[in-house]
Length: 238
Image 1 (tube, helix red, strand yellow):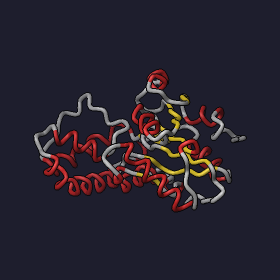
Image 2: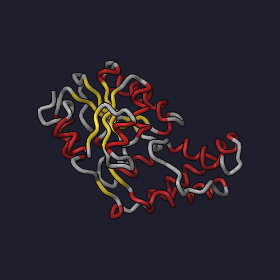
Image 3: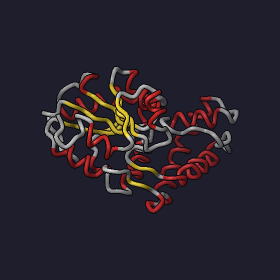
Image 4: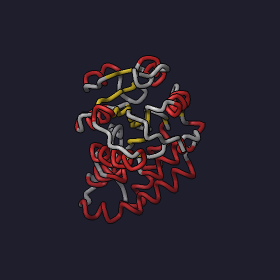
């Protein structure tokens, strides 16, 4: 587990998919098969956008378009979640994944900085986030996080992340002391919904231009570029 310091005055919350790692095309069929097992089918995935959504939001949208009520979906959701986690753990192939540039060196730099704390803010269910990060031995680097478990919509996750940060670090974080790091317009909207600034990296499905148009406070090609420039991430972080 990463070190925790009550001195840390600045908090960074990282997305996973498209920000820290890319899993490639292999996750969609695993998710689809779990949906079929639990719900008998789902809406077509062609053109469907997963980026920035929570796992429960994706299930509600895909199964809802298959003619099921929210009550039916929620009743079957634990079955779908358990099946998806089991199959993801068994079949996620690290050889088809990419650890994105500068992730390990950036986390090491933040761990060594007494004024920085960091955690996760991801739409993945917690156990699925662990599977993805463990493929690169990164799970233990994040001492806390907010996950798809904490609500169906991404802005729901921010209060949970801040509560856990306060519990672990012993003081509350105001919005100006927090940055959310992600790769999608939904990451940016999630941050701004709570008065938090957003660092956006173009390592997911959105271009730098699209991320600027979505209102990101800072836009970089990847975390390596961010680590060279952003005042909270640069080697001589201020």
